[in-house]
Length: 117
Image: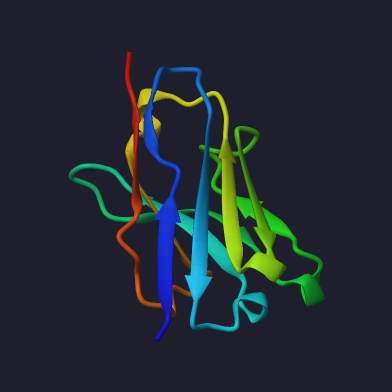
């Protein structure tokens, strides 16, 4: 059974940093292009970053609003996807989720990120 478990969220002041992680079990993690998504209150879930597989060079793609501030990475040996976030702003407040790039896996519960002074 495939399971995605996100962690690392919390409350941070504007300008602060957080590192999110996502552990994937029950799936051939290394074969998937993986992505991070987020859902802000009252809004639909949106894609924010993708990292391709090792066989395709682990290329990264970002939504414009997070480009230069967020860095997606993966550790295939640990079946873990990471998101390093710096210069966080209140508009980054959301529940953050990981999934495959095509959202093919069951969604996890996400991890809450709150940016507030």
